[in-house]
Image (cartoon, rainbow, N blue to C red; front, side, top):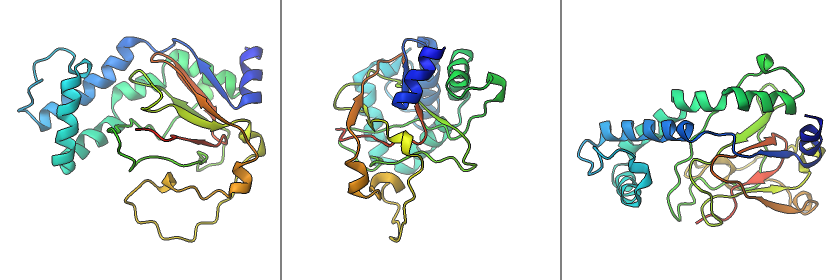
Length: 225
């Protein structure tokens, strides 16, 4: 435990390898599909056992999203609070590691703000620039990032600025009116002189791994395609 904790406190992140079970991921993807099929009962993949493993299904759902954005928003909104997602992020192994990193007992933990990302190729609307994840109560916190698909260089490795968590919260003054056509963190408000203090690192993890990082650690979604 001390070795894990030291690595986390020094680097600001820790990768727990092969701790997410395949059925935990499958349950989340099945939940997404079930909601999608209720909204689009004419889908060609309605009776397929594991449609998420079929590239043609992904093409269909991407097209459906483009042509039926309001209906697809129901799929997205439902997935954010689904029971399979909550079960995954509060699982015994995840809770044990989070407790080690936060120097507390699993019973002391709470969780909020789950997000299931559904990004399509070349869609940069939800791309994030450098930012921190500040908790409302300003309590010590972690961000948990778990890939539901195999991560390649062009679809989503997380980028971090090494050891940036050691400098604490960065106060940003926002004077621009946000138009909400992109995410609030899509434009970096952190001065370049602060960013250039750190080395950028791409965190490569595999399906089945879980990435824990300090909520003060500067991170971005990179230039994904």
